[in-house]
Image (cartoon, rainbow, N blue to C red; front, side):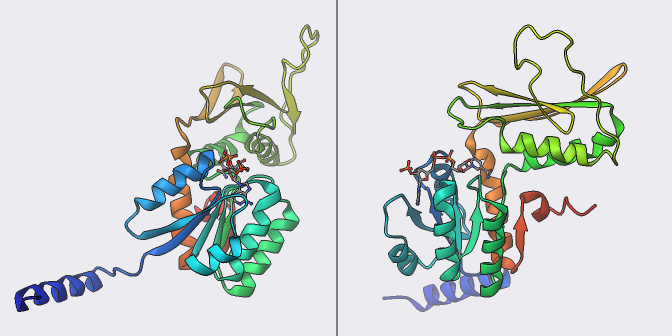
Length: 273
Ligand SMILES: NC(=O)c1ccc[n+]([C@@H]2O[C@H](COP(=O)([O-])OP(=O)(O)OC[C@H]3O[C@@H](n4cnc5c(N)ncnc54)[C@H](OP(=O)(O)O)[C@@H]3O)[C@@H](O)[C@H]2O)c1
């Protein structure tokens, strides 16, 4: 039996909840929840008070049945490029906002996803890098780019990374070159090469170097040079938890407003200057 006092207590707590603007938790699902990043995200989502983690979907699971049963409001995808579009388009079709970290989606894929989100009045995001520090490292490097004669990018990743250089490093070099107002960086080529490849690759006159070693997650530094000085802007990750704050921020933003973002920098308001 519920006493009158207890009933009043519950009513008061509910009223207090309303006063604090408490609302239904955001239902979130993760595709790739057994993967390296997805497993960390699933655990982090389950610990957030304003989020209800409704479960994960793995390769071979029945996606349509999962979406129908769980009805997520946001759908996080950290799978494989060949799988992600199928997953997220199905999620959008049932009204879930996509939060896509999977690398390698084409520009045409992203356009298609944006169109699907718009048609359903949903927000969404595709971000090649959900680490907030990495996005800021690139932004700060873009500010420095016009003021230095030369720049080199060094990226360091875990030994199981399949591609080199990382997409982030390549896009950093392109973005830095684009900030030069038509004046190219100077790029010093070695006059005598005694070991092929040691000056790295080159994009927009920016040398790009890739290190692959166990122990790294995803680090990158940009080193700028001028006579008598260098400036290094470095981002280090110590675990894949690095992606959690950016993904949480993105989930809350895309369910709050029907806007589609291409990159965390856009969501953070760092673009368009
Ligand atoms: N945006 C960012 O900030 C960021 C950061 C890190 C990584 N990434 C990208 O995120 C993706 C995942 O990275 P990871 O390191 O976590 O890779 P991972 O450890 O290989 O995890 C991928 C997971 O997705 C599963 N999967 C494959 N197809 C699926 C499907 N159709 N539905 C559901 N799950 C499926 C895989 O299962 P199987 O093992 O059975 O194939 C695996 O468990 C990669 O594209 C990576 O480049 C992005």
